[in-house]
Image: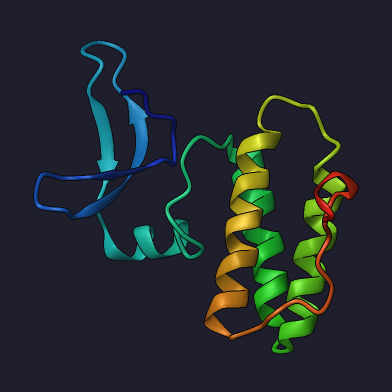
Length: 126
């Protein structure tokens, strides 16, 4: 199993932690298990596999989305972001796109929000 810096990690007791680095001499992980650090790093879920830049961008965007109290506005912002990233073919775009889709589903389910329009491909229309 591979870990990147700032990835979540759990102890055998289920305690969360943040990977702070890897010791080059013995390849052991340096883990920070402080509650403040874990809450700050993973305020929008336990994200794994993102680069530090992607993680910062994701957290900043989700902070902006959560600052809006209107559910319609939150859904619209997330849908626009998903649409903008769907054409991106860079290496980490599939991972972060999945996280944005999951956040959209979470916002919609927790607020009992249902879409008004459903996109159906022409090949699936009866």
